[in-house]
Length: 119
Ligand SMILES: [Zn+2]
Ligand SMILES: [Zn+2]
Image (cartoon, protein in one colour):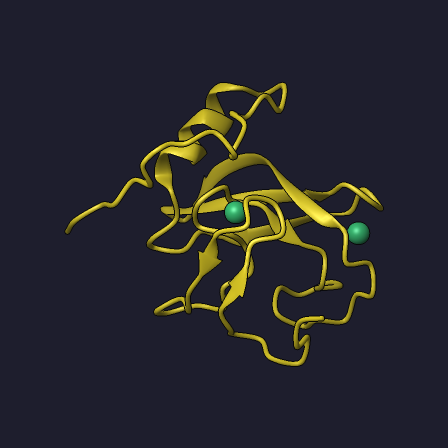
């Protein structure tokens, strides 16, 4: 099992299996490649108070104060949690989610080049 006490750590994504490195500025709580998350937080992102452990699907995105926010829904218990997007998240996936309100997201196991945004 992974170390659940660490709030900002690298991990392997439970959905796509890719290695996820540390986020630069924020607590990483979802995969930047497929945007899936794990249900480890209870109320506040980063509190790690949930024992659910279900996979969380990115179901919606919206902009809040100019920042992108992704909504994750737990496959296991149905809880929805909003998370701020990280700078290196795959923005193409966000666009796909926003274009498909019926939760149709591409199979993350298909090979596609991770979108690297250069500043
Ligand atoms: Zn992933
Ligand atoms: Zn859950």
